[in-house]
Length: 109
Length: 173
Image 1 (cartoon, rainbow over the protein chains, first blue to last red):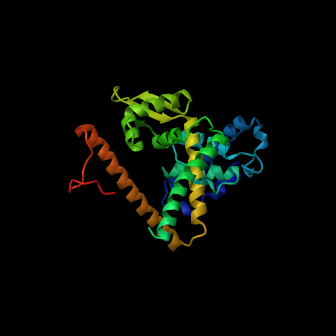
Image 2: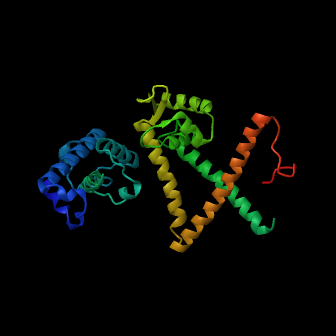
Image 3: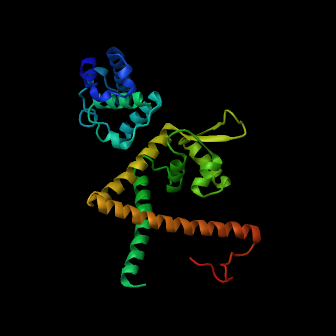
């Protein structure tokens, strides 16, 4: 998981609280978010965590409907004390997109 | 009224009725079929984040706290809303949405955003701004009328007779 997601921390992070984080702190945080998402999805769909990878798509591969997607969003909002607007969900396709979105919103707080 | 005005009046009434009817149909066929439109609007007024007092929520909905209490009792029973005492002032009851309530809120919001998207998509940015401004004007006018009649109700309760215009005749709409 880590190698897939940490490489997305770019120069655009300048000026953001994220730039104060060490790379392995970022990796740890993204891994934690990823694990939480895996936990939520496996609970919801009763599937094995090994069936999910960062590139797994939420709708086509996992078959999440809008209700299940919102259920996960509400759980993530509660767990990370963030607000996930509908507009940002439109850009989410894969599990790693959700990780990045939650990471961005958490570090913006 | 000329023909254009008649068409406009008819369209306004259709929009009002059809939005409500569509919401109601979508509700009855969906996951939240145990909710009425009024209950969904109460859920919307509470909002998905944080909590509200009963009086705040009643004022947002334009109803009395007594009426709201009945609605909240029902929503608590259906597990969409939860109640708790304010930590600083135990006399105040705060209401907030349960996970189920938040889900209903988000699905309902999605209905609204899809509706707006469909209306706005064929328009360019100038047309969108113009439409938004015109609808805003209609909203303001209707809200003013609502306020006026709400004042009238309050006035009737205090004085016991209808409020008159400055000239003592029928009030102007």
